[in-house]
Length: 244
Image (cartoon, rainbow, N blue to C red):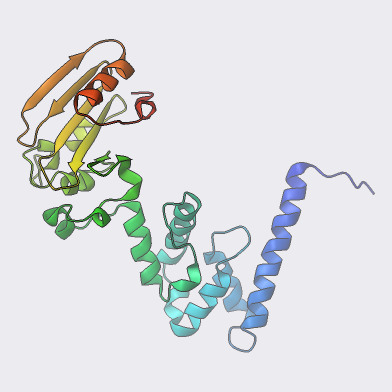
């Protein structure tokens, strides 16, 4: 009998042990309350390798048995785990969330899901800004890179930018691509905003009224961006522009 194992086999062995320990803990905790078939079904909803959410799932199941049949349960928990691993979700303790709805709300907030009412309101406090969109921040400005049309509308509220329009004429998708990135400069004091569109070898700066302030043309994008940010008295990590 060979005692030699590959790294993959060893990992699978440990993963299997962790899964069994997670399920064993749940079986012990919910003995007489949740049968084995129900517990097995709940374990399939837990996306983690060590089934670390199965006890939470069991507790929620005892309160609301519909959670076992909800198609949203595995997707929400998968997103929660991924965003937690990226440190986008700050409260990673699943047991502090008493319902699936609370977990869903936290995931949507962290993922930047923005409602129509939020878009209309715009950014009123720093808490309205998705941390994942922030590329620079100091005591004077926050620089964001919106990843969706909804985020662009939220951050650009109060401007005349076509990328912030709530109508069907919104141009966000046209202004963002693999070779074009869009940044919004939001003053902490609520003053006039600026938009910066960075294309390959070309940068355009817009004021609050969508008027072009400056155009920059050249072959050294890092140098151009540094000059632009010096002019605006803002220090943005130029490495963020790598690959534009």
